[in-house]
Amino acid sequence: MRKKFAQVANEFQQRLHHISRELANIEGPLEVNQADSKLINVNSTILQSQQDQVKEIQTRIPTLSETLVGVSVVEEECEAANVEENDYTVFTYQDLAFELELVVQNIAKKIAFIDNQVRRALL
Image (cartoon, rainbow, N blue to C red):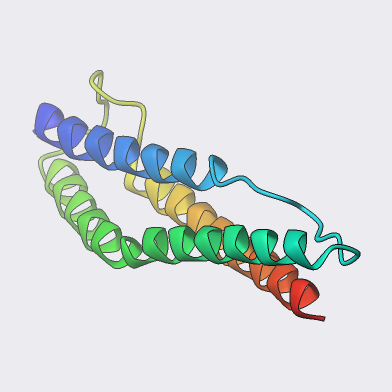
């Protein structure tokens, strides 16, 4: 049971970490220079691409949330069998749920930031 929970929890954390890295790697101009219309068009294209990337990442969250339910089930099985210590992982369902919520919040913030930059580019 310990190994089963550790496998599920560690795989979930790895997927979450991968999404966090993808989100952090989305880069581009932070400000749009409105003096040059060509630069605005390029920046708008980059911002649209960033927006698409973040929204694609966001589409994976429901599947990840479903996987988290599986983590909860396995943790409950461990608790029912009085398995409290786990030498195979440092994660608990609560830890992973918290980390998922942080990623969801970061995605929302990234989308809001990019949306704001797109609006600024259009002004």
